[in-house]
Amino acid sequence: DIQMTQSPSSLSASVGDRVTITCRASQGISNYLAWYQQKPGKVPKLLIYAASTLQSGVPSRFSGSGSGTDFTLTISSLQPEDVAAYYCQKYNSDPWTFGQGTKVEI
Amino acid sequence: EVQLVQSGAEVKKPGESLKISCKGSGYSFTTYWIGWVRQMPGKGLEWMGIVFPADSDTRYSPSFQGLVTISADKSLSTAFLQWSTLKASDSAMYYCARLGSGFDIWGQGTMVTVSS
Image 1: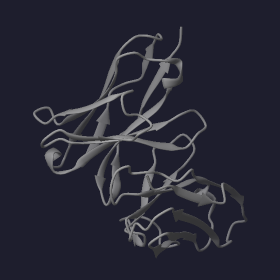
Image 2: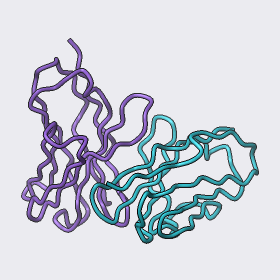
Image 3: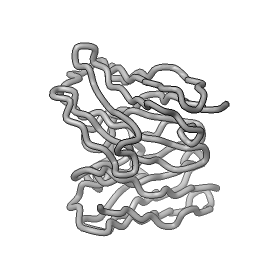
């Protein structure tokens, strides 16, 4: 099975900082990669699909890039409301594996 | 409004059985796969399995194969996750989610607590 590895597992940054999270697939998955945000105590929310397409309603400071095995989620200017855990997920075929998550703090 | 509404929190004893549900509305329920995701306290998201309500085609994560049963009743627009014999280690939050491009719609979660 394809493994999804995120890094870092956690990070602390300041308001206004540019934040980058990476996700690596153990085999190529084309662009079948989604990113989710889960705020403390809340339901996960889809941020980005197809590696780089912003879900409707998601602020434009979020962006995604990559294809094949290496992917990136970028927050261009970190805001207090972005404190959350972020997960990548492959969805080209089963199993629809998640990465282990990245916790973003301020 | 497109939504998935899950059944309420459950408190069970080890060895008991359980079936939780996820009802879809506001869209054609048979058109999208419905997945189940486990989140243990303080931990990450784990994909458990997925069902296609139109024909009940079901896939399981190797980590959950044989431990749970996923099903759907298209006449009720409802997907199910069930255990025949619960263990304390099954205590977790369980989410259902619709597979569009990624899991685009999520249920509110069902907390399952297994304790003697």
